[in-house]
Image 1: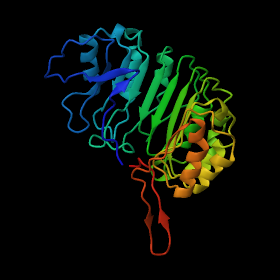
Image 2: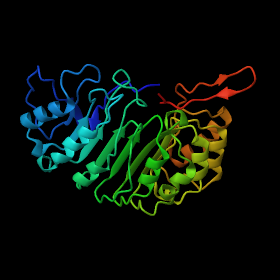
Image 3: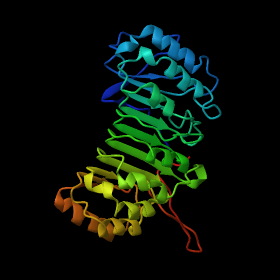
Length: 318
């Protein structure tokens, strides 16, 4: 599966693409939409930084609440360092900014594992009131441990999340964080983390307000499930999302044998490799307690070799 649609909303606001230089922007209230500013990945007539300069000149940025960074030119080769620099340099022009997403590209523009990224923590330093940060793409991504007192939602979407990034997030001091969503991915695309890298997250000491935890799109989904089954942070969660990965009966059994999950509002396991018996056990155990359970298998199909080798795949890889 590839990502086929741009973000439709951010921070509860509908996404609106700031038009290209050849079009005059239509009147839009600055605080009524999540503004998407982008360029073309291939043979772009305008650099992202030039599009951003036009945006800043045309829109009352003091009222902008949500900003979506779309494609930048040659994103498959160039990291968004100049994009981050432009945003941080303009920090004083965005006093109301509360949500930022970096890298809203679909597969036709740049496959998720081709998107080059950079150190994104300067955005948190520049915008201390930011409540939401989203990032797509793991190649070259850096996230050294940081402290941010306002961030409530952090989403990192990758086909392979480097262990160094996982450890940086885990070691960060994010006392207000309520929603954490990490796409761990596969080693083929740089996802080399292990469950040990997740221990500070699963312990939850630095995340007193965490209510939604997503650890998904992973080849090590069974090992993640085993770790989650005993994790202290789970007791305070409302949503546990282990979807999009290679979750088999082994991981599901560990969840059922571990600490009770009946306090959850939702358990999301969609795109899985569970047998019918384990699926029914999950339903009987949790749905009877009022937990919403997503067991939609989707396109999670197995490939078997003649020698008995079985291949299973994450939902989003390349």
